[in-house]
Length: 615
Image (tube, rainbow, N blue to C red; front, side, top):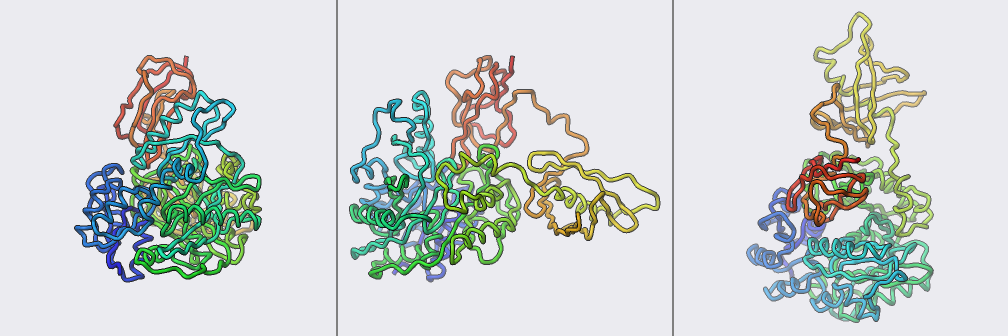
């Protein structure tokens, strides 16, 4: 029997595995980088071991340090989570060589499937080698790992070399393996996968299908189970291919076989030899705990002959600290509050007051809703996210709500091009026009009690300015004998935390939370209080390129120096933030008059990187 489990991972998945271990009476051990010293997963574990450094390559990708940590902490088993070393056969061997139990598939199965090139060869599918114009579009893809890292769509042959270079760099950073390959890019398809679970006694379960078609940058955003609208023959074909893949490599434990479904056919993509991020939707539908089953299988227990029956439908949305309006730029900062309504499963690696850093994936949490039907599950999740308190950095919460309510999704007609087609509409500003007034009145309440009260003579209106959804809003209100008033709006109640307004006969409640001097959350709307007089020192020269996110400068375009003529859209430098590379391009054709960025430099949001002066 396993008594102590070390989770060789961080954040949400570490916390999720620890939860099952606690329920099973198993002690837990965390590993953490210096950047994660105060992270939730390090705090909730029974013991924690430091991995010196912050970069993934120095910490969570150092299998030797993790095995030493497990031995030092007295663990007798290691759970890899997902990402990092979860699909690294050498790491799995080092765990078992140290006399520990590996809660995962045999290293030989990982080797056969962890490399997508070898997996395809095993199933008789050859990657593209000599790409020509007739092969376009193609997908450059990392041979190891997942999560959309190391992937690039190429539509012009001239862009292939640059895509290969960028994909290799990103894959090496994320997985410690820079191998990439090229395959045909199937457009208009759905991303469908099958959950498998196998024991050491020859039983292989298929636990239904999942649809993960809503993706950005090839990373899944919304997933559901079962995949809607699949015919019975297609479903059986998916199950059959998944079981054949598992049996072909002697698979043990939880795994996922992924497909692209187009024109009624299933095209094999890969087999992920680990637990998936989206596993909670399968757990909800089948009423199982996949982590508990992983542990039982690792202990040698046999699965029942048949899996439990499926019931209902489940939908999961990944809440990211990122800005979909600005190229999905990852965000960092203090997460002041995170709460969802009752009845929604929330898997997270953060709690109120935690800091979201720049070193790792920007996912804050996964929210999961389960209901008897798909329509009910989708409605429940959208409503919960709409009411959730997410106070801190900019997130994709509004995008998730709109995506779940989009007609193409509710009618199950989505595919992997969903955000390519609809991102502009899904991110167009639609904030509550009364939110700035509510923020101003809440602020005024506190001040009016201490010297800013009403007067016997008519007063000039008070003026406040806020930035909301990228636009500036000005609001005016007055102090009177009867309280605060605003033109055209009846103020029913106002205090520092709650404002109730009535407009056109409709009364609405506004919960107000202020953090620092300028960040205000009014219900689900984020506002920034603007100074009465702009700061003249905050101006930048025209053509200035400012860092859109905190991160590290990893590359500068070859031969780029001050005085160089650049073209509009030309890549100038690359930032790495939260394990993704972000390209910074010239805003216009002109001359590069300043180049402040150098490889290895750490930058903060708004840092000046370069200046391009137009003619």
